[in-house]
Image (tube, rainbow, N blue to C red):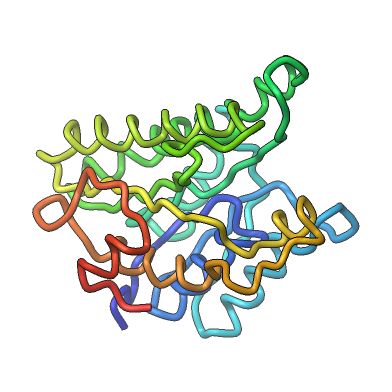
Length: 249
């Protein structure tokens, strides 16, 4: 197994790409902390942190579900503290949690704009900052951020989400330079249209048969989790670029 004994935190892992990444890491031997807010079924989307953790345990790995609000510093610090208390290390962080409220800038309420930026960008910053002390001390680690084609490609009525994802790409480049001396890899996955539960709710009548699959991004996350700063860092990678690098799907 490529990640035998490694410890990973995956945010937003109740469903979609986050869940697929959590399961893919577990299949390769990692113990996975599932960090998200959903503890019970009954919301607009299926999935909970406990269901994902159960599936990880069914694979023979340790799955720990921790309810986390990544926009709150104290909640994120508790996530890191509990992970270190349980495992003694954090080797991999996947900043996957995200939220989107499509709409024209003219119409979007300020509180919704703020929430999109808070979850996507502030959450990525807070989670990264919380795990860095242990990674720096051990001089190893892999941080994987989730960007999107929306960060560089204009999609109508999606400015807030696009701004957040563009900022995550800049964060990835800058942080990678800062952490090279500690051998910590920082990279970003850049999905295009991916068939997730969220998209299914947002666009119920759209044919998604030709879209990318969450499981594909799970495999690409495994590839990046195996990198250190000497091999691959500071990259924002599409599926095509990952395939060129030899990532298995």
